[in-house]
Image (cartoon, rainbow, N blue to C red; front, side, top):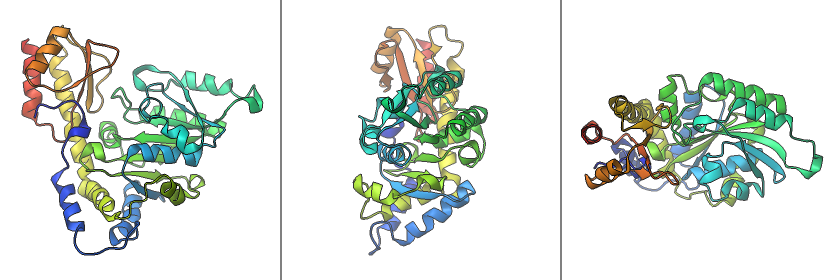
Length: 342
């Protein structure tokens, strides 16, 4: 398959599928109280090296929405990048889950919130008192929607701003594994040690069937989390199948191995076309996504050759290529040969 359209379209990794099959034996207590569920929190606490609460879910939208509800009152506001998933691709779910909280976009290059713009936004909030929404949280996408990664220094700068203004920090980690392997740091360093209070921990894009988790590092944002999940319609009765996926995902660092492969394929492609005058990379390639500007004739040619990718909305000469754990290097090389040989 020459599919570079989305890591959502990749198959389930065999180890994770086997874990689902293994969980499908006999009867087990429902609603998350199965034997696998009892292991889950301990395993994640070991992974992050701290106390944390883990809420297994089936979608990133639910994770982001519940995080919003935990951190932001209906009269509150979440600061996020204009292109962030919660602002562009959640169909108003954060506003819905929170009961009406406002999203305030804060611009920045390459999908990242600009620190000066963030500081300026917060410095100039509050002048209208109860007439304006109360800034309550900052939401970061890691990796960003541009395929870039916040560095530890950037995360710590945001932490400093958030603490100054008393805001929660939420990280939308749909591709958190790809970001972590790009940074080459521990899970702890990339999250709670850098000021992250809540993490939407993604697994579906990186080999799971349908498994996500909301991880709470700060107990101040842990009130009635299970009732919020129930009210949101995400308390799965046969939760053991979600538990099985998450446990297999992090077992023996499988999740990091899969993300490393995906990132490596993206880097292989970007390195191989950097001297091609027909191609320009829109953003730095720091994880598993590549945004390219190229002639329309080349885009058409690639599609005719059976390559699948996403034409970026509003920019007809820009495509997005997504490399996954299931991307074969031979297919990456075929794409490189097609681009460079045109």
